[in-house]
Amino acid sequence: MNEFDKLKTFLSGFNLLTEEEIQEFSEAFVPAKIRKRQFIVQPGFTAKSRHFVTQGAFRAYVVSENGSEHTISFAIEDWWITDYNSYIFQRPATMFVVALEDSQLLKIEFEAEKQLKASNHRFETIFRIMAERGLAFQQRRLISNLTQSAEERYDQFLEKYPEIVPRMPQYALASYLGMTTEFLSRIRNRKRPKKS
Image 1 (spheres, rainbow, N blue to C red):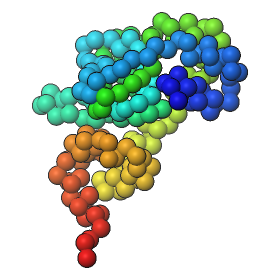
Image 2 (image 1 turned 90 degrees about the vertical axis):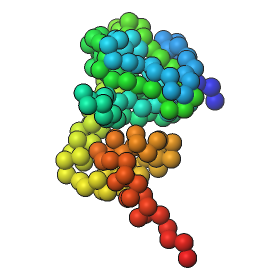
Image 3 (image 1 turned 90 degrees about the horizontal axis):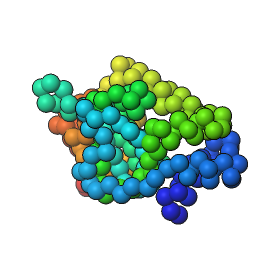
Image 4 (image 1 turned 120 degrees about the vertical axis):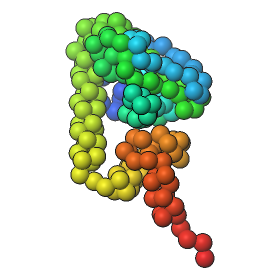
């Protein structure tokens, strides 16, 4: 399955578009190969595109004034990533988005997305549904951070995204879950099966 096939499969899941519309939607995207540790978004530069990951893994994070890194999101295959505040409002980014592995993605430029949405209301519906799902996810994450212990957050993340955990550096995962790397290490050690 090539990268465009992955996007077409993703689009088919909405049950909104015809085969011709899926093809037209896909043609607005451009493939890109990204090397491990390469940035696709950096603070101070406007995010000109949003990215659909077809292979690999990415991390979006911010750096506080004291130099601490705070992971905002991850993306693996069939997920989307960018600095959405920068992309949607076309203003300078505040986040870094970096490849954690050698990766491939399909990107759509801001102007191309605008034209796509204007050409067919169903295309606009796809983007709206994705935005709504993203907002609902962020709300669940915020509530989880406010109401659950660090260990409960880790257990929940591991249960929901078991394929992500082994691919993420421990410091990035700890930062995403709102704990220190040392604390995450202790949680993981407690949960390892005891050797008999």
